[in-house]
Length: 334
Ligand code: FAD
Ligand code: MG
Image 1: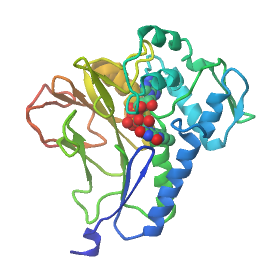
Image 2 (image 1 turned 135 degrees about the vertical axis):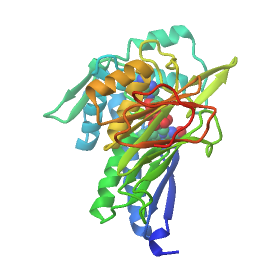
Image 3 (image 1 turned 90 degrees about the vertical axis):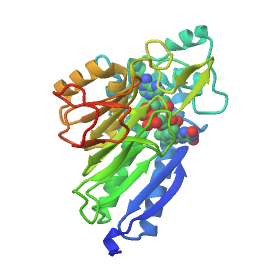
C-alpha cells in the first residue's frame, strides 16, 4: 500500500457523540489538538451541564444580560438570525420545550399538552436581546432558555477545518456525530470525491441507502431517526416544531445539506426540514442556490435538489430517486 492510501483515524467521545478525524498522514498531536479545541468549545456552549457560557445566559433569564466571548456571541447571533427567517422552524429559544421532552436523554417522555402550551410563551426568539457593543446576551423573560444544539456542531466543524488548514492539512474528514466536513479530496484521487453514506432511516448505523459524493464540502443531516422515543406506537423525535411544541411532523425522515460551510448545513438542515420537500426546494432555489439537498421521505422517495455541489448514487432500490428536472427513476449514478 502506498503511504497516501493509508488513512489514520482518531476518535474521541465529546458532545454526547463519537467524534472522528481521518488524516492521510499520522499526527496524534494534531488529533489531540482538534479534540481539545472541540472540548473547549463544548465547555462554552453546552446546555447539558449546569455551567457554560450559554447556561450562564440561561440562568440570568429575566434578570440581567451576560457578557460572552466573541465566539459564543457570533454563534448566538447566527442562531437568532436563522430563527427570524420567514417560515423558519429553527428557533434558538426552544430550550424550555427541548428540556421538557428530554428526547435522547434520561427521563424522556411525552409531556402534558398544558405544560407544552405554557412553555411555548417563553420561546419567542425576539426576546433574545443582543448587545453588540457589550458583547452580551439577555433573555427578556424569566424561564427562557436558548439551545444551540441545532447549529453548534456545524460551527465547531468549521473551526476544526480552519485549525487543520493552519496546520497544513489539505485532505481530511472530520465527523462530529453525523455533521461531516469532507476537506479537500481523498488521496490518491478517487474520482476526486469523497463518498459519504446516506443512512437508512431507522436502519442499522451502517445501513446506507445511497452515497453522496463531494469534494471539499460539508455534509450535514437532520433526521427523525437520530434521537427519538416510541410511545403507543408513535415516534417522537428531537426536532421540535416551535409552533406546536411537538416534534415536527411532515413527509420527511431526513434532509441532508451539502454546503461549503458546515454552519450553513446545520442551520439549513433544520430550516428546510421544517419546510418539507416542495417549499424547501423552492426556498433553496430562490435563496441559497449554492446549497445542495437530499430529502428522504417517509414513503421511501429520495429527492435531490440541484446536483451542482454533489453527485448521488442510489444503493437501496426499494427507494425511488427523483433528480431535479426529471420524473422519478428507480436507480441512478450521477
Ligand atoms: P439537529 O437537527 O441539527 O438539531 C436538533 C437539536 O436542536 C435538538 O436535539 C435540540 O437540541 C435542538 N432543537 C430542537 N428543535 C429545534 C428547533 N425548532 N430549532 C432549533 N433547535 C432545535 N448530547 C448528549 O447526549 N449528551 C451531551 O452531553 C451532549 N452535549 C452536547 C454539547 C454540545 C456543545 C452540543 C452542540 C451538543 C451536545 N449534545 C449532547 C447533542 C445535542 O443534545 C443534540 O442532540 C445535537 O446537537 C443534535 O444535533 P443534530 O445535528 O443531531 O440535530
Ligand atoms: Mg441542524
